[in-house]
Image (cartoon, rainbow, N blue to C red; front, side, top):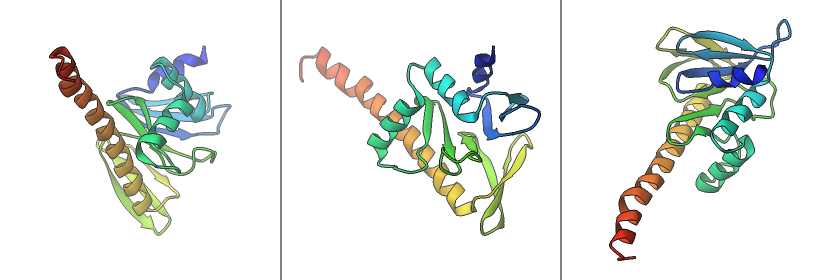
Length: 166
């Protein structure tokens, strides 16, 4: 059924945005094209997180604990690999989620920006360039913090335990 739409949330996802036309609630932009879903952006993200053994709220809570980001918290859907950041509060029905792919930001005015991905897809959001850059930085910091935690566990703690040094 509709749950399969959440499988489009993966390594190839660029943008997840609200889209309220003809019964659809969201637009999923991937490296391979644009797809529409009758599920909300929040439900799509929730289903994607569940596929990777957590919930949306669980992931957000963990990231807040790790980073201290209380508002507009980035989301790691697949830890160390796939993450996204919200352009506004995730409670805002117009919140757009940008995934960890390179994009350029064009400032249109103080409160409106356009982001452009390498495949040519672009869209405008009612958010300043400054906010988008800050959110992108938060996502990359979060991804690297989790990667670093896992490297430490793999490369330091396990060998020490094996040698009975700990």
